[in-house]
Length: 103
Image (cartoon, rainbow, N blue to C red):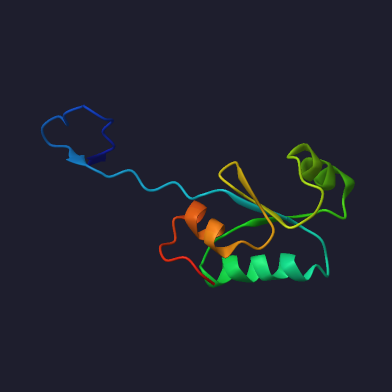
């Protein structure tokens, strides 16, 4: 029998402590079709095994979300609520906790 034990709690006798699984980062990329820089960001994320959701800014509601974040163009990659505009591999790696910087 396994139990997840919260911080500072001692498991009762007979229970094994199970480490909580890491929560996946939530990554969303706002892009447009035929956008070279958008496609490069998507490829970068795929090459690093990062799962992401794509929001096509050809749809007005997604373009409005980009504008509400203070940006005028795409791509905008949002990593756990932190937006990164454009293709910035070093900054993307930093927010994704991917080790060495560079593409």
